[in-house]
Length: 428
Ligand code: CMC
Image (cartoon, rainbow, N blue to C red; front, side, top):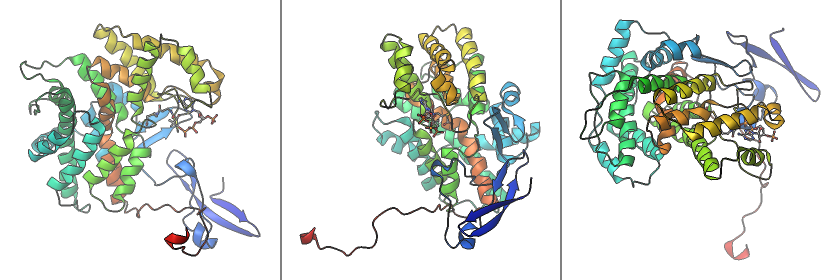
């Protein structure tokens, strides 16, 4: 293949270089397009064909169902690694040695205490507040308690900001859940592993010693790993674009949390469970809901189905489906919701509407079933997604700043009124 792309506009032709990735992905570098063509730009709603950056963090091939972090396959990581190792690899580029991991964990623990005034902010939220709104606000509030913006040219400052947020974020997650459940706020224990400590912070009852269930711990580790990064999705792009104005790390993360909240993105895990519950309440008639999903006059979509990038299968969904089966079996839970989920999946896999549009179950289709089995309230599901995605967001923010990417500022094609004279209010 030539390494030049040619563009013809009217009489004029232009040449643009091609950029190739390490997995042979190809892009047309249109940096010079507007200048060369005297004002022509590209338009691509939803950025379906637009690469926003070059990145060495996550590789995803939606046609083949491949997902890799730093070159490691998601299947192997979910099977053999723990969440903190994966977080380290995403953020620093390599899997840690035992010493590196121990130091990373020790530094995180050292920085995990949240200023006690953050409790006052949390207390001011009504009980009805959605946990994602609370989490986004508290993450933003951390900026006020840690006002100095990170000097990205200082490895030490960058490292300190990273261990601070890796330490404090799980506390905010746990407090958000405890507030919702009316439980007193707590800290975990420094003697526990990263994920075990999260569990203790979330689930410990005030009058009883918390005993970690290894089945739940393994499942949570796996879920967090599967959510840890997903290249330039909506929330990650938000984190990168907010940070591209040189907004601080915590402020950029808060923007990412808000983007994740929506039901077409991370909010889908809550929406899936609510949908399955509604189908159950309605007598379990999956065919009725399949028909609604296909009806163009009905806004209903089958939540947990379809993906912007995966057009074959979502490799995360395959791992989660297996994990859901195992967790429910190991915990001895018989959840009728699982049967409805299986039924919907089978119908969709054999229905030409879904097959033709390449709509398969995504990561969120089965994750809620596991979260529910773990005793996590439905409204907290997207918060759990955010907890998993934290290292990915950090890695992407860091890469964007170190690559000295310019401020993100798309252009537009204006379709409004042409110049017109001002009319005084009496004449309107
Ligand atoms: N149910 C019914 N029809 C669907 C669905 C669905 N879940 N998803 C897509 N379609 C149809 C859509 O109506 C369109 O049909 P047509 O070509 O006839 O107009 C076609 O499939 C293409 O859909 P699209 O909306 O253009 O595709 P997209 O790439 O813009 O959207 C998506 C991707 C994930 C937003 C969408 O599939 C969706 O809304 N899914 C449900 C929400 C969901 O599960 N989101 C979680 C995504 S995975 C977690 C994450 O990383 O965020």
